[in-house]
Length: 398
Image (cartoon, rainbow, N blue to C red):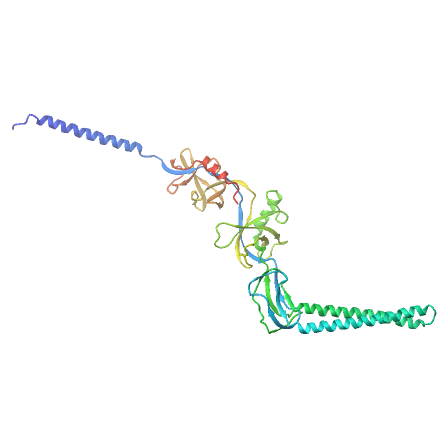
């Protein structure tokens, strides 16, 4: 068999190229193997330290500061209604008019009776004055003098009674105009013009009612445990007295974002309700826009603590282990499990009462597949110093 002179060198070249390719593949595999991470990558950072005030939340209901049922003080036929149902009225505004004519005539008659009594008394006093002059000369008997003195006293009494009857008649005439005793929003009228209404006693006809709106009250019930917490905080000086101090409440209506309204606590009941174990509290709330109405429900928050520095972590860092609340922290490059005692969620961060300190590095993302003691590598997490600096610039959470 005849061989070409270039066959052997060509084969050698092919073998050499194959060897180079295999070497390159081995080097690439080694580089990938070296780059493969040995630790689970997680996002972690030190807790945020914030000055916070913890707020306790309750359900409250608005009530009017003044609520008045409007009833007539005299009986008669209703002749006029001077308001539109549901409008705002001011104290002293005329609301209803009752037929004035019978009361005007009664007042005129009483005034005439008073004039007669005054005239009769004047004549009796003149007679008494003459008797006093004649008595000095013993011209008038003692009995006559006593009789004229008695006549004057009786005349004074009759005049006083007549004047009282006149005042009563004028007052009844005044009561034919039913006026608003307070400022506020009036309800619908319950009696139409032309009806005979009763007045002056417990069976008086209800005409309408008025509730004041600005300011308005918000009442809510606090359980006895929270009440005792407030009392103890007052005793150790960490919060003002519920009754004597200035306590601000925050208020939110359904649909509100956050708690945009506020009020001042102005009343705390003097006893715990035996049935519910709660104490009634009340705040006074401004209502310049008249948007709040008696009967509305609202969420109300009362400061449960004074402002204090708190350890805050992302809420997603918290998980549950056999019913206990836990977080993972990074210690010596490994994930360690910590039991924690949690507080409320404030501005997206969870308050930690116990279990985590300011110097711990808490895993906030990537903890789903972590086992305690497993090696971890922290990546892409904001520095704790930066987070703390950002938080402290915000001041006290309100």
